[in-house]
Image 1 (cartoon, one colour):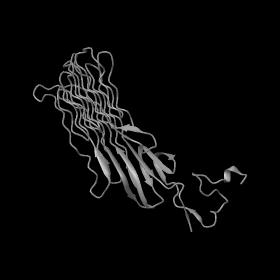
Image 2 (tube, one colour):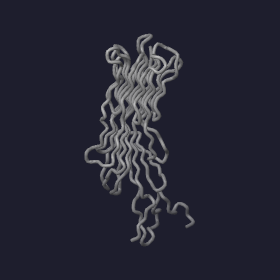
Image 3 (cartoon, rainbow, N blue to C red):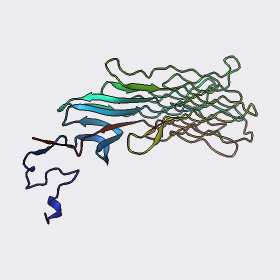
Image 4 (tube, rainbow, N blue to C red):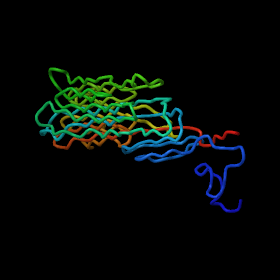
Length: 314
């Protein structure tokens, strides 16, 4: 066949003007989706949703699904010389190896936004939680906001605590990431945030809890909890890292590191906190003094299905 526009390919099973060879038909064609980017990984099709949209399969089969909720936000600005705030909790990570879909149906996809920051006045403020991400009836819950003179918010992973002489700055969380009852093969992940001292506790990550403040000095904040790594898009990638807590009183010390998986770094005397990474559910980094709080990173939904090169003989 000399005309390259009429050659068979993985993306074009039947070029215009050609019929399938006698007795040979493809078992599946590429489906359609809105709000997603399509890539091909070997014989697998992968849709990555960074925006809310929908999935429209032209086959009845199971798909592999990874959902990540939005990360939690943090607090700031504070009054001068204030103790550090807790890091934001990561968005929850929900992995489902086999989710049944039916040809001709439309499946809604919602991407959770990251939680926004909250001003640090009065004391006891807590950053906003991240929003939930969902695919059909499966839900990955948003991460908890980091606290300032308060415990972090509950969430899929909890926000880091901020100093509180009565509560000890403890962070709380709710292990809310449970697959819907009709699903099988689902694994949900989330962890609590760290306790504070004069520095803030780290936000919880999908793979580990946030670190407590303290270490070698009371003013040193805790690092964010690490996320979890998946290769559903063909590349090993971390999702759901917690935000690092904020240091206190502008005291020199190491930069509180956000967890792998998009967690924002916390503040220190020489560095400013950072937002959680988008499309990863990263928790926001905790701030200090008169600097604005940070926002959590948005979530993501990734679908993978096989069969793009599978043929059947009639």
